[in-house]
Length: 188
Image 1 (cartoon, rainbow, N blue to C red):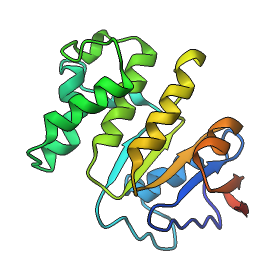
Image 2: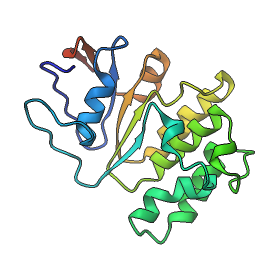
Image 3: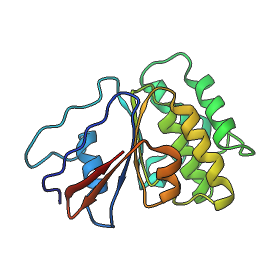
Image 4: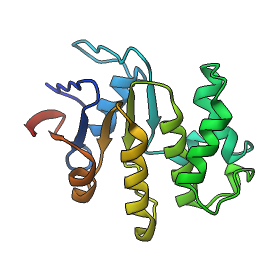
């Protein structure tokens, strides 16, 4: 449950949202996305849209679609002509060695998470929200995926929910801490 939680992001800013389990991080993300209504207060959404990698990444994929189609989905929905070209580029970068024609339901946990990350990055929006984006990723691939996330963001803002100090150091400009649903610390 959120109490006195406040968060703002400027265009292109990269913010880590950290705190203990149960602090309200995922709830705050759901409020920001409009998936949960706030009990009080206001939410101003990103004008250009949001790419989202949920904590439940596996359930967010269409298991009967190929990796390529899953990654292309945000651009297909936005009726972008470059949907498959952008998806192919992201899949090649984020999932090297994985056949992009393979059905998402037949991927390993780490491959599913990487596919969901590529899909979030394929979104044509101004903001990417990633909730624990590397939790199922093998340590040997983590740095490569951090680098891909950093490089593929371009000028978009990032809200990164993480428990990993390396993610914060490598990817974010500012940290916002939640404890018991309250924003108790913000640092640059």
